[in-house]
Amino acid sequence: MITRIALGVIIAGVCLSTVRCNDSEWAYECIKGYCQKVRLTEDNRDNAVSLGACRIFCSKYASLWPKPTGRVEVKRSLLQVNYNSIDVLTHKGDSPIRSIINGAAKRFKHNIELLKPKKSTLKAGGRSLIVMLEIEDSSSVKFLYNQDESYSLNVTQTSDGRINAQIKSRNLFGGRHAMETLNQLIFYDDLRDELQMPDDVYIEDAPIYPHRGILLDTSRNYVSTDVIKQTIEGMAASKLNVFHWHITDSHSFPYVSKSMPQLSKLGAYSREKIYTPEDVAEIIEFGKERGVMILPEFDAPAHVGEGWQDTGLLACFNKKPWQSYCVEPPCGQLDPTKPGVYDALEKIYKDMVEQFDPTVFHMGGDEVNENCWKSEDNIVSWMTERNMTIDDPGFMKLWDHFQSQALDRFTKQRGHKLPIIMWTSKLTSKDYLTKYLKNDTYIIQIWTLGNDPQIKELLKNGYRTILSNYDALYFDCGFAGWVTDGNNWCSPYIGWQKVYENSPAKIAGNKYKNLMMGAEATLWTEQADDTVIDSRLWPRAAAMAERLWSEPESTWKDAEERMEIHRERLVRLNIKSDAIQPQWCQQHQGSCPLDGVLN
Ligand code: NF1
Image (cartoon, rainbow, N blue to C red):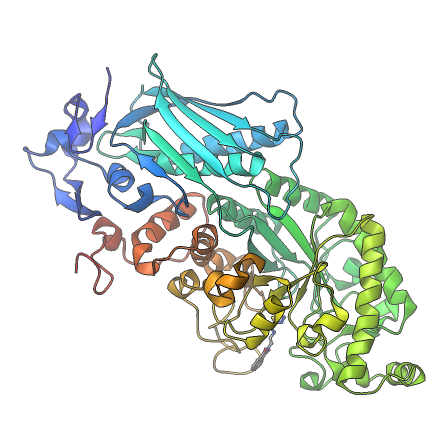
């Protein structure tokens, strides 16, 4: 039996044959583009629309998150999907991307499994779904800046009654995004107890910004590989593509370096709280199947401490009072005057290059404390011997001595030049920027305020930038202090709406939009670990994801009901996302925000 449903008109009376539909008290109606819960009566029972169906036809952009930037045509016609008959095919037989496509396909099917309610077996039957991937370049799985992540998705019904989802993309990344979009179009219809999807769809889509990331700090508190993978899972569902791994800091050294195993032996919080080469490989593979690049940061010369005690390479480690030598305890910086520093760095770079095979690398470079270096007699005499002054310019020269050699050692291990990311700092300020950092090598990650004049300065000088302005993208802000009472330094808590409206294009201005590579939401983990990371990140990171994918003209109000729907998708993936409103609001869309369309 063909169960073709048009909105408000069910062509075959599917509902009449099922007990559940007759049992239902509620259905949904589309009013001014919002799904509204309505009472089922004998009169409207036969053409009742489920919330899932309503969201596809009634909500903006078929409820997709992030909203596509190109054409979205979803015709008002649904078919039941046979969840036992879903295949993902590609014409590329033994291509290098084969195993990753298999992984992505498995995940695609798993996400459909998750739609089934726990207490239901689902009605049997429905159409086979064939996903046909046409990926032009199947030779590489490497993440590159400015690669074409676009895709098109065309869903049709074949003459023999199957559902055909044809995906076209330039590379694996675009193809994977398309599968994500397709996943979002499949839903559970609780009135008919079946999975359904629209059978006439055409979508063209591509992101605005190439760098769409989350930073997770795994040093201040350890984060298990399971929670890291969950984070990557949520990223994939939201089309985020860079997992920035702030893997070490002064607090602990969980990264097991093959060349310098003593660092984690001494510096990990415990023998368990480490990332072995196997853990790292697993996370990288997990990311590949989800279109997420793992970007390692080795932060130096500051933010170094635990683990390095026996190397003789540290300055001011755990020195007191800590306020004099760093911004939070324990203090510690590498001593740039020690040649051994560069040999040690080279070993760590060698390990990271081997493991991550990076196409871009993060060298940190934040919060260098001049007073720390000044407090070590040997550093001051080394500088004096070389006619370096003991003041700002002198210390910047010392820092340049460090950074230049670090870069040389990295490039030597990588075998060729790579773009290097560094945090904003005194070195990236007007006085030193162009003198010490070349704009064809360095990309600057901004963590200052969104209205900081330094941002324009960077762009004016041709530096590519990544936004992590702390007034919108620091997800650790707004909790209790931990070195004081009251609230922590960057309070208040940043709501998803503020995150949503933090626009790189607006901050950069149109002229420099192209130098904005994108943004990263950061979660520094002084006050977060496995137990709360999901709720700190989600759904706020997803709010940023739409900003970066679509750079919408509209405000959060235009996104509110879809944000809630996407939050529900994340929860289905077992991500313990924060709640943002009563469930009543999604059953009465548009009725909660003040001065919304329905208010
Ligand atoms: O930047 C601050 C800061 C603080 C600014 C203004 C007032 C403050 C009062 C107390 C504590 C702080 C403070 O700790 N910090 C820096 C916190 N470190 C943030 C980052 S972002 N480190 N590296 C980055 C990249």
